[in-house]
Length: 126
Image (tube, rainbow, N blue to C red; front, side, top):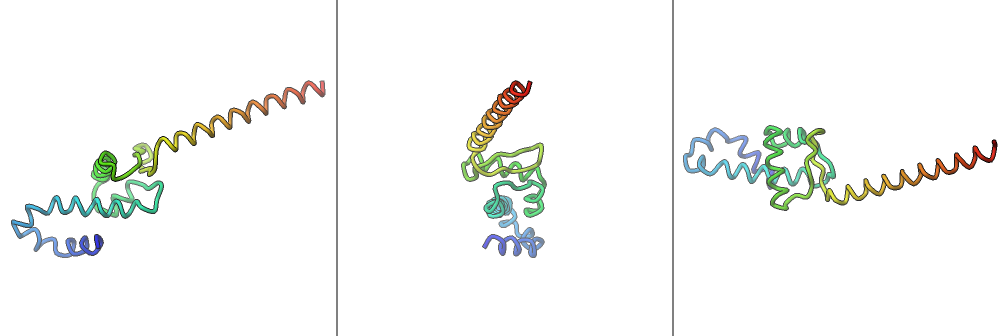
C-alpha cells in the first residue's frame, strides 16, 4: 500500500539517498507517492483544507497546490482551489455555480413575494 511504502521511505531515508542509482529516481517516485496519498486523502471529502493535505504529505502548501493543479489539468481530480480560504473544493464547479444561481433566484422570488404581500397588507389596513 502507499502508506506502507511511504513509511519505508521515511524510515530508511539516509540509506536510500546514499545509493546513486536510487537517488536519481527518488524524486519521481516521491512525486508519484505524494499524488497517490493526496488522491486517497481527498477521496471522502467535498472540501478539504490545503494545510491539512500539506501536513499529511509533509510538504509545503505551495507544493500541494502545484500537485493539485497538475491533477486537475490531467483530469485526475475534479475540483478547484479556493486560494483565499486555502481550500480544495472537489466536484464540478459548474454544478456548484448552478446551485448557487438557483438559490439566488429563489431568494429574489421570495423577496418579491414579501414585498408584494407587505404592500397588500399595508393597503388593506390604511
